[in-house]
Length: 433
Ligand SMILES: Cc1cc2nc3c(=O)[nH]c(=O)nc-3n(C[C@H](O)[C@H](O)[C@H](O)COP(=O)(O)OP(=O)(O)OC[C@H]3O[C@@H](n4cnc5c(N)ncnc54)[C@H](O)[C@@H]3O)c2cc1C
Image 1: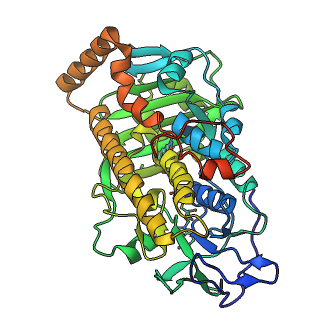
Image 2: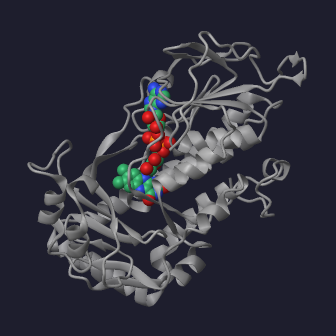
């Protein structure tokens, strides 16, 4: 899928140690940003930094970029961030949901029934479900040609500082960098190096299964269903398949005695249609399972020295709002806005932390609150919750979606970053960052 990069030269050095680079034979050398991790956060950061004038190298330890075979929801906030990189419309074209859908109870009653058009009005754009491989292909296609080095596990050796480069170690040698982006995911070793006293992620209490299968024979309305101690979702993909997911409260590390498809059948086959049909269409190898962890204790800052964290490395969250990857995309675009070549890097990284810590911390907390609400397991509490949801939806549909609408409402940084690139020509008013 993604190109496999060439190995790094031993002890490759970037030369400049700060944003004021020396002049080379063809003009000032570009400062060098090294991105550790080629997931959604690392790829987006690399594209954004490249477009704002950095030379970028992405170091990915996996031999190739093969994202897990599941879907990912991209809300209008992430689509606007991708607009800055000229990629937003490519995502919008993949919107598959047309017509009715919403939130259901385990027996199939609608708790909140809405339409794709109403949702788009409330959230300022469509919610788009894409296959992860599609998103990764889109991002890799926008990277500069020789910037991705797969099969390269990296370690932060020195965070650097004013007058001193950061150093990243790889099996092929050390690399000096003007900026290091720690995009190495929830178990980030870069985060541990920067903030060794931080307790790290904790278990949310639930596990998640994901699968992509052919669409059911009978038409279905996309739904998320809140049942007893778990959630099920069935969402269409543009390519005609269906992305489905289920969650359940279990101790961490629990695994099915036979296979995860059988476990899903035990837990969900008596839920409403089309869930049994989706399960019947799945093969055991289609089902992915991950325990869900999150950063219950927020970091006070996302940077130290010349190193900055993006995505799950900074703020892993429960997937109940579908915002982990969306926030990683926002991070990359906001980072490139503040860390501009020729500017004061340290002030730029401080500005990045100043805007990203409050926003992402609030979303991590909101996702955790939603996880508590949609994993209730006591019958009386579930009945009370469902009654309240139905009543609130009748009184004012926007009451239910207000919390998410305020997340989806985000606008990327305005000029000068967006204005100075050849992408992002959507002419949006500068707004919240
Ligand atoms: C069940 C579930 C459903 C979800 N649904 C959604 C959704 O609908 N919408 C949404 O926005 N988000 C969703 N998320 C969250 C989303 O998947 C993550 O937030 C997102 O993938 C984080 O991207 P990242 O780039 O920060 O980290 P990752 O995707 O984890 O990427 C980190 C990369 O770093 C690499 N790496 C690690 N260590 C090193 C090293 N030492 N050297 C080099 N490379 C290294 C890894 O191999 C990996 O490729 C969901 C998560 C789960 C668990």
